[in-house]
Image (cartoon, rainbow, N blue to C red; front, top):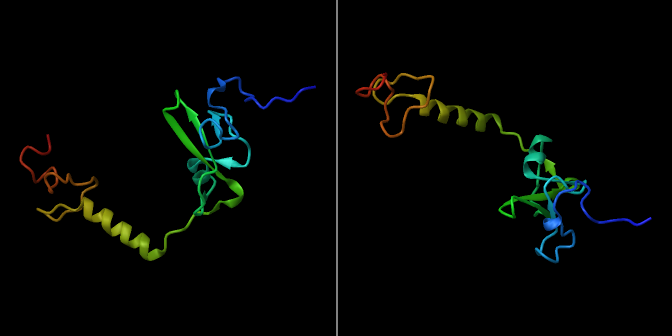
Length: 127
């Protein structure tokens, strides 16, 4: 019985380099990352963040034009939660983006930065 170190998904092995000799960084093809590693998006979905640690491997696909870095799950830290003051500041900033400078009304949409006025205040606005 022989054990193979090739990807198990049947994808092209062009990007299979677990030792990092070809790409200088451990590299795996799309959908064939080892367990215990996750992308930033996968960490975020699990409520985690890299926690200041550098990536340990990468996934390449689309002829090497796309890359996703992999982080160790055991070193990941929980996502930080915004403080009430930070949430209040964000709400204030978003409200300012919806407030018209001409009529001072808060609109249900963001005011275009180009005009600085709501669609009711600019000439030819609400079509």
